[in-house]
Every structure is written in C-alpha cells, then in structure tokens.
Amino acid sequence: MSGRVKRILALGLVAGLSLVGMVSCGSSNVNNTTASIEENGAKQTGSASELNTASHLNIATQPAPAYLPIQVAWDNGWVEEALKEAGYTDIEVTFTEFESGPPENESFAAGQQDIGVMGNVPSILGKAAGQDRVYLGISENGEKTEAVIVPADSDIKSVADLKGKKIGLVVGSICENLLYNLLKEEGLSINDVELINLATSEQQAALDAKQVDAVATWQPTIAKLTADGKNIILADGSNGVFLAENTIFGNREYVEQNPEIVQIFIQQYARAAYEVANNKENYAKQYADKYGLTEELLYEALKDANLPIVITETDINDLQGTADFLYETGKASVQVNVKENVIDTFVNDETVKAYLSGEK
Image 1 (tube, one colour):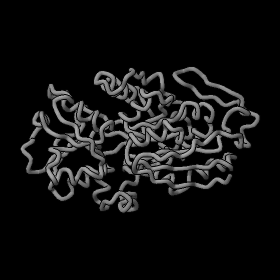
Image 2 (cartoon, rainbow, N blue to C red; image 1 turned 120 degrees about the vertical axis):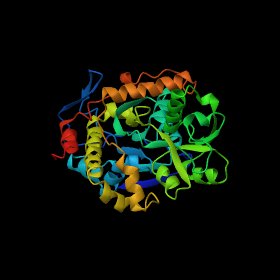
Image 3 (tube, rainbow, N blue to C red; image 1 turned 30 degrees about the vertical axis):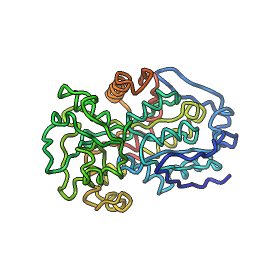
C-alpha cells in the first residue's frame, strides 16, 4: 500500500464505505521502544510491537474557515511527509470533507474515520450516542464565529423578538447551542421558537423566500449572508455568551493504539494553525475561491477565529456546559463527562508548543 492521499468530498449522507481494518505495516523507528499516552493523569502504555501499526490515517474535516489549518496541511502534504520522515512509509492518509457535523458523525459511527474536527454539539452528541471518542484539543473558537442572522428589514430587533419565530439552522450543530444560550439570556428556551433544519447551503434561499424568520449559522456563511446588506447579524456569542468551541477528537481505540501517528498529526496541525493565524490575509487570498468568497469576506470570516489547538480547563468547562445542555434538553440520552474523555498529552507535546510559538 503506498502513502498516497485520497481526497473525498462528502456533502450529504455517507454512503456505505467499507470499514478499513488495522493491519501491521507500521513504523521502523519504534520497534524497540515503548509508547505511552496519558488520559487524565493515567498512563496508557504498550509495547511498540502492539502500537502504531495502523495502515491508515483517516481524517475528517469540513469546508469552513474554522478548519482551514487542516486544509493547509492537506494541500501541502505535511502529514504524509512527517509520517514518512518518522518511518511510516506505508500509511494511507485520507482526508474526507463533510458539509456539517451530523453526516461526519455517521461516518465515524460506521468506522470510516480515525480523527477529525467538529463543532461542540455534534462532537458531544456522537459521544453520547456511544461512539468511543476522546477529545484531543480545540481546533477553533471565537465568540463572533457563530451568529443569528435576520433580514435587514425584519421586525426582529432583539433576541427576545425571536419568540414564536421560525429559525433555520443545522439541527444538532454548534449553532443550536448558540441559540440555546442566547435565548436563555432572555429567559426563553428552545421550545419558544420553531427550529427548521436547513443545511448552510439552503439558508440564503430560505431567508429570501421568507420560509424562515432567521438563521443561526457559522462562518463563512455569516460573511456570505451579510455581504450585500440584505441580511444583518442579530446576535453572536459576544460578552461570554458562547465561546463556540470546535473540537479535535479521535476514536479512542485508534488513538490509544497509534499514539505516535496521532502525535505526528497534531504536530502538523499545530504547524498549519500557526501559519494561518499569522498570515490570515495571505490565506484569505489563497483560499477565497474554495469558500466561494472574495478575499475580503474570507478575511472577515477568519479574523475573529482563534486557532488554539491546546485544550484548557476553560475549554473543558465550556464543553461540559454543552454536554449539560444536550442532556437537559433531551437531545442526548446520557450525560457526557467531558473531562473524563480528554487526552491533552498530544497538544502539550514540546514540538506542538514550538510550532504554536513560531519557534519551529
């Protein structure tokens, strides 16, 4: 098996791709070592002959500026290059792009993905549904990266005015959590509005046709919907209302069995995150066409995005708030304890820190 990259675009529901098994064709540089990872202070160890033997690294992403670092690493072949340099010459690296979290979760449930990025709500819903995933880091956050949009001529002037209105959004996405928090600030609940399930690609048409009164969405859709002045931002997560955490996570079995492979991926993710964070104008110019935006609009979508990679106690607590929201509203049948499912060893690696600080 060669180290080639397959580029797959998955915009709808995932078709029945076959489950890729784990076979022994691993690295030559770990044969005589012992690898370990740490989960909440507890070491997970195993002999090198048992670890890092996967024949694949399947990476799930989405076409949003929040995940531009993965796109940059993908386009430059950094993950594949770093794996080969470490002796992993036979790993097939596959990047799959999903329109949103729900279809990405379906692919994870089918065993087709190993590691990925996703908004807080679908990420925790996947865990609550029984997917044995662990949280490795934060791909992106930012209070202004998710927003509720209304037509400029709407009589909706405040969040309180949303009561009884139809709101379009990707049900089960991070934006549903934003809406919940905004409504809660006004003494309202999700039950006080009517949710209309709309893909981001359908939201402009729905607003134009007056099929919905507002939409809750993320970048770059925010930039697209407000570009010509026909629509405006009613509210976002500012003032601590919503941090908009997007997670980096992986299947527990894959992570525990392939710690060095996962570490290499996280290192290259950090490398790309530093590049994007410190060259937003240049990357806006380079990737404007991909997102169907002008350079100016893509820069607007990127400027409020933080790309921390490292996961902190603040992030964990915020994600726990999302888990509590999902359980309290009946969207999740079990209460997820986020902290018990965090492995922060990878993002605290010295090479990752060097990349994030610009020292490497």
